[in-house]
Length: 329
Ligand code: NAI
Image (cartoon, rainbow, N blue to C red; front, top):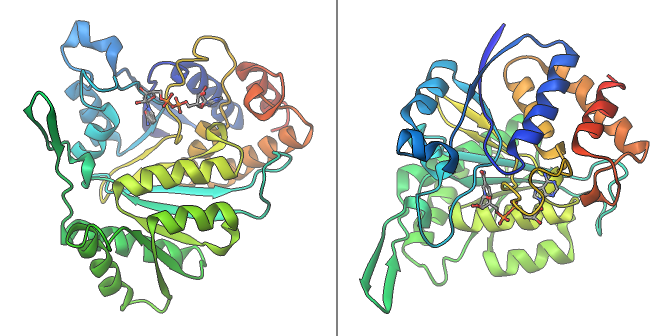
């Protein structure tokens, strides 16, 4: 029996969580889900969007599966996601991006792993309003955080038979902050037998769009990592299929790349694949690799049978898609 925290989120979060839970139940993995709510819906009752009970639950169980939580834009509370990653020191954001069967995209054979630093950079939330017409945000980069994410990227590359790591910065402009990130990657890279390539983020975006197959593992500071991982999601069929994980020394939170998709929330239209792929990684992480592989096979068979949600050009509902996968397990 595994004890795992489930953060159901809001928007499409509850729909895709229910679909994924049903699939995991059907494959027969014994999980005791500790279901936790967070975000705007809990503020009235508990005063904060990320109550301490959520953090305590993940600390107790060590593993969480999370669906998206809405963050108000330009005002309101700080992102629950950013806060959670900070509280649990989930310093590595891991986003493998590869083509799924029968999902039409502009490119074939994409296989990029984005490793994004998760705790600092502009996401440290150090902002101030200087006067009515001036605001500033501080981009903080430290050597310790940069070295540990570089080490994570290289270890991942070695353990997963990847060929090289590319560090992505804007060190020609942000000479000190991005310069430190780059320098840390170079220093850590010296301990590994894998080549480290270097590229500026603007050129990287152009190169990815021209030929994504030239990249392997990408190592990025927080902001560029956020942007480039959505770009990579676009290469493989969009946010509905892009998986992710946030990993630290003691805890791991698995979650899709996408947000709460308020435009389609409550309509049973969302694609649960991204959340399901994240859950498959989670199963592998907790030692249930076979169960994860069975789900992946059933998912691929379902896609190959041309059963797809609207974002992929089909017309099956979110719950209907889950049923189709379950029938193929
Ligand atoms: P979004 O990812 O929620 O949606 C972008 C577009 O992709 C929308 O058209 C949406 O319908 C579509 N989409 C996303 N996931 C889909 C799925 N599973 N199936 C089908 N279509 C899907 O990004 P947006 O609109 O910028 O953000 C909405 C909210 O989500 C914001 O409050 C944002 O802060 C939050 N957010 C939360 C994240 C998290 O909890 N980890 C991550 C990203 C955004």
